[in-house]
Length: 466
Ligand code: 5AD
Ligand code: SF4
Figure 1 (cartoon, rainbow, N blue to C red):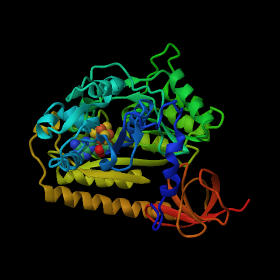
Figure 2: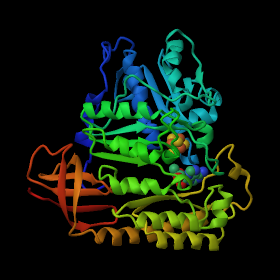
Figure 3: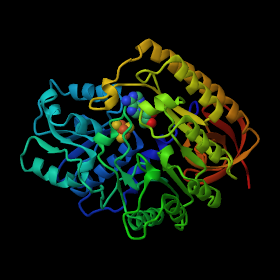
Figure 4: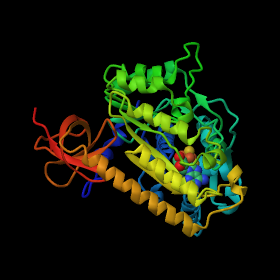
């Protein structure tokens, strides 16, 4: 994020105007008010947009503080211990306050993971519901409205996806669109298969109908979402492959950009690269978490690919006709990770030349196979490895971004600075660009920007006057 920029603040505050439909009773406040805070990933952000839609459709009105709300919801994350702690500390804030007819609900991954234990730890909580049960939310809310004080939705064996008639989207130009929910991979460190349940793909017809609807509402960029988005399998007889779906979504009139996240290396096939090459509207960015550069550690993580196989995918991406930006995730300090394993991670980092990386210290999670693995790495050693990784990646990003100075990129403008003529947006490769333009009203527009300087996390330049 560029210095001094409130990207999105002004722009995104207008988000509530982007509801897909406005039911007659939306915002009437007939049933009271709700506050919704979201933790975690983009999947959670988008789930919250759908949850907000469900509540608005039931006549609730959204408010910006828990104090003003009759229903307080936390959509939670449990990917690492810290994320879970944050939620419990948030819930703890209500310890000394009487409930007085107010409902506090815990949604999402921590809800699924802890289940009814949440009622024991925080007896003031009235609803616990995991993401695989969101299609039952209206029913669960009705139970609470009817006076039931401990309502749960905790099934994960469902085959359902969360379909809503109304989604209250936060961003007026870029819309998330779920194509696959849950996860069938079994990475040994990860809670997601437990918290989000098994893989469920939506039919290609439903996905494309939603894309058309979004275009009609004025969205120009859509972001296809899934924990393993490229594991998509069309359940309908049409049997579209993920790459075909990408192309079909990109052809929807009005849609100028299609993003997708997160890709799993195992299912990352050459036809995805071909789709990016063939269709300029498919964004030139792939998020491809590697987690480790050591085949030994990858095996212990049950990632189902080797270092060499991963690097082959990178070679495929780097040989494409478009300059596809590649970002990744790393976990350092997995149980048993030796100095030699870690050096392999550093050398993979060097070899792959990522355009961005999210790096984390391994955090043991309940019910996962890795939780009980021997040879835990001491916290200080994890911190040392993380710092080295971050430093090296920063150098790589600095050099890679510096090489873009002098080039021109199309930017979707998403933010406006307080400073005059200063704007910010993203390239197709998902790079943040801060730029100057004397033209007014650029929010939501596509602008050509000439890059004049670069830092490790963003580019800067001037709009090209056409
Ligand atoms: N500890 C640390 N990081 C984790 N991630 C997932 N599970 C854990 C864990 N137990 C990281 C992975 C994943 C990203 C979303 O979070 O890198 O790609
Ligand atoms: Fe967190 Fe994973 Fe759940 Fe997203 S899916 S909210 S990252 S635990």
